[in-house]
Image (cartoon, rainbow, N blue to C red; front, side, top):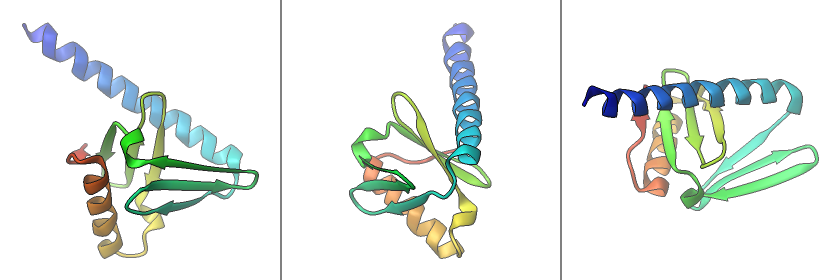
Length: 108
């Protein structure tokens, strides 16, 4: 019975770690990235690339002490809290995620 709970939790922890490491490695290669958040989703602007994902594309949101991680079925978006210049903007972003995903943010 414990196996039914322990295996999915261990898999989720390993997946979180793998996505985080992959995204951290990408940041060093991509240069400047501009993110815009609104009630519809997230836009990401890079030198030769623009992408937009609507909130329903994200399956999960996780928050820890210094970052947010929005995951899709195949990857994710790592958002460092240092990009926000006030606690109020972090709170606003937290509300935007919860409203967009229609579910609470997991805390780690």
